[in-house]
Length: 289
Image 1 (cartoon, one colour):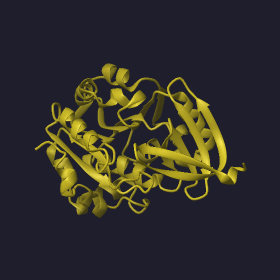
Image 2: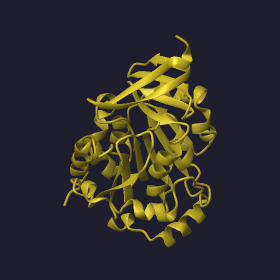
Image 3: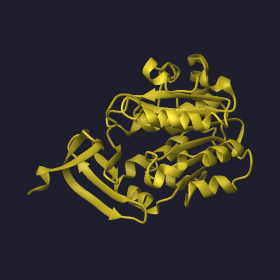
Image 4: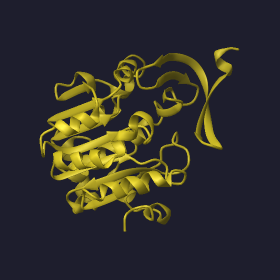
């Protein structure tokens, strides 16, 4: 069988999934934590797969990465110190560092093999972020890092993890969110992916309920990522300052211009940012009342 006839079958739910035609296999590694597979597709460029689940593709990564990064940073308005948990492909780190207002970005990824393989086979996703002097890349446990981090040492925390199973499960616990609240500054914000609520309603519901124990504001916003099938992807948003979830597009535009990202994005705009928090009722019903 030739490579042109090979397909990756991604079983997302018991009776539903998607598949990609594989043009060329680039890497297949079993790390201490997970199976890592990178291949070149015919339609989505290069694709990163962890434990059989597609994490990112070159074609549409900009949607997820921009919304996961620019929304919390611009909602905060003056974030200088950013903590990234996971995101070993480097895409979040790259976009955090696009903000000239950011003085320091710490990225903690538990699986060093993801970083190594992303640098080699997915160089366009991380770009030059790995060499930026403001970046501190740590191969280690995000739970342990937030336990030890000083109080009020970060303005924004971005959690880019797998779903709450396996290696990513500990990033959805009460203990983790309690420490995140402690190490965030007075107007601090934490965001993380909460799945596709049409098929994974429990993920957003349970994560939001946990975070409500530690943050006065708990909500979510949406992004349409073609690779994440099943409808809108939700991104959980929890903040110490409730007003950060409702920022007028005019203010977001001013902040984006000051940060240096205005006009550089392919999905995020001030208007998209503001609209993303206006949730369809079937998603809004999953949030704490």
